[in-house]
Each structure stands twice: as C-alpha cells, then as structure tokens.
Length: 257
Image (cartoon, rainbow, N blue to C red; front, top):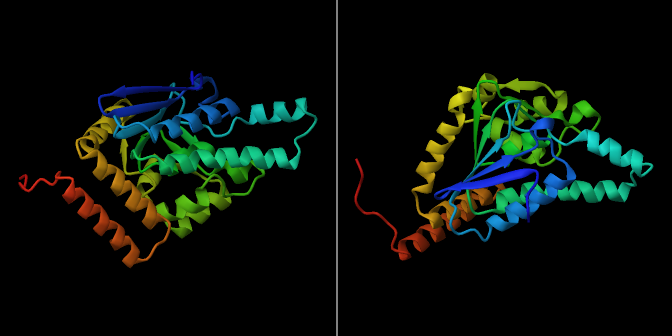
C-alpha cells in the first residue's frame, strides 16, 4: 500500500512509524485507520525489524485522537449515520489496537504534545511509553459525549496506572501532563523535547541488540499475562520459551560485567 497518512522508515533493525497528518495534530481519519491496519499486519511478516518506535509528525503533538471533523462531515453528507455503520467503523478502530499488541516487535511510543482519545490508546497499546516535557495525556472520550472507556482504555489503563487513576482519567476526561504521567507510571521516562527521539533510539538500540526470537517470545509472554492467566500458566509459557531459546543455541554463557 502507498501510504499517505503515515510514514515508515528503518534504521538497521529499528522501524520508525510516524503518524503523518500534522495539520490535524495527527488525528486519526478513515484513511489512516486503513493504512495502519495494513501496516501492522505487514509487521507480522517483517523478519528484519526487531523494534518499532511510533511518533507524531510536526511540532504540535503525537495524536489528537479521532478526526471529528471527518466524522461530522461524513454524517452530514450521508444524512446521518446508521447504527450498523457506526458499529462497523468502531470495530475497525478496535482492530487496529489488537494488531499493535499482536505484532512480534516491541513498540516504543515517543510522545510529544497531546496524546488524546485514540492517540492515548496508541500510547497505551505500546510496550514502553516515553514523553517529552510538553506531553499531555487525556482519555478524551467522555468529553465529547461518548463513554469514558474506548479503544482498549478500560483494558490497558488500569493495568498501567492502577484502578483509581484509570477511573479518574476515564470518568473525568482530565488532562495529565508529563510529570504527573511519570509519577503515576503512565510513562517510563520524561525528556526534553529535543532529546525525545534520541532517547527512544537509545532504548530501541538496546532492545534490538537482543535475540529477535527472545524479543518476540517475551512480548508474547507479557501479552499472555496481561490477559490475566494464572501463575502456573505464566510459568509454563516462560518454561517453554526458555527451553526453545536454549535449543536455538543463542544462550550466552559468559557473564558480562
């Protein structure tokens, strides 16, 4: 697919995905949804890239969420939107985030400026979240008259920040800025804006230096535990992974000091 709303480039074993609608603060429109679904599906067959960094184009922010202007214009043009169409569109949005979790590559979200609504969910569906000092996170859904939990937020958010903070974010639509996001564990680190991508590349480079299969199996194990399996089942998955890695002959028996 010839992408128009996203850009993708690689640096060695690291892929860099850019949400590329800077004029709308990288709002998610129908075309971007379709392109991202295609992109994440392609990553399942990508055996060269080990880690993916996501970022927003332009100076304004990571992603402002769903393009509400497109939604309104589409509804007016069609004389309203039937419920089945709303449901179909919603399930396409939801598929996007499931594909992010299903892809074998760990995902690092490098967030500057707003990550709102669907943009927040981009960050939540990632494995590691980094923020610039001007970053802002908002579960915007309830502010625009929708349910306060959408696009995986009721699944991911409380697992990341705890029940109370997740409830506060989803029920109030409050904006959480970088330092508070760091304090509650929503992001791993906060950096000056000009250093954000450099630091993301540093972490991605460290991860990419590991075995490709080890990264894949580790993300798979974390996904399984994220879904609430028992300790016994989690350890069975870990045991399988360790045995498989040992049989692949990639174990380094020399301790690095």
